[in-house]
Length: 184
Image 1 (cartoon, rainbow, N blue to C red):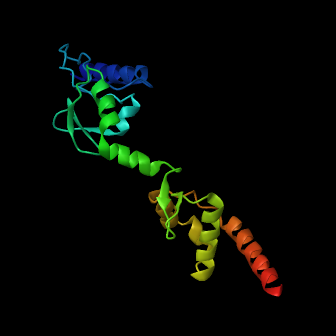
Image 2: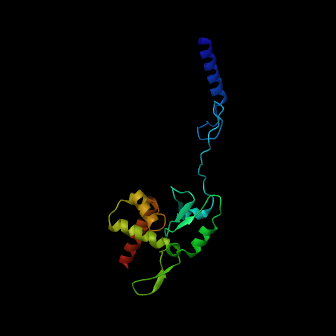
């Protein structure tokens, strides 16, 4: 009766103190349970190591299949096999090539005058345009540090926005330069 209850409490307390800092056993961990029976192992998903997985997504319903994030074509990708077929597809995927070309900062585009120019503007031109936007739109200087503007710059593949202190310095310098140009 009471003697058995005390022994169980002592056993539980001793067990808790010896398990401190150790990983807890779960039902699906495959370890032997208290009754001596072993549970069946559950499949766990391991993190992917190859960089090619940035371009593919595994299907939830069938882990041995995946699809290209660009053209949505489906591939077999069993975890026990390699990923050569996925790498080879990246060499021939037209949608991926188009995305890759768009990311190239040296890509040329035709401007209004019909001449070729680089698609991405230089950082000084970007800074000047942001400063002019703040002045013309009478926006607060803290706008360049807002989450919305940072998200916009990231989304359209622009440079990281400069701080409001840099904006202040740039706008004062721009004002002095314009004032000097008007005097001449």
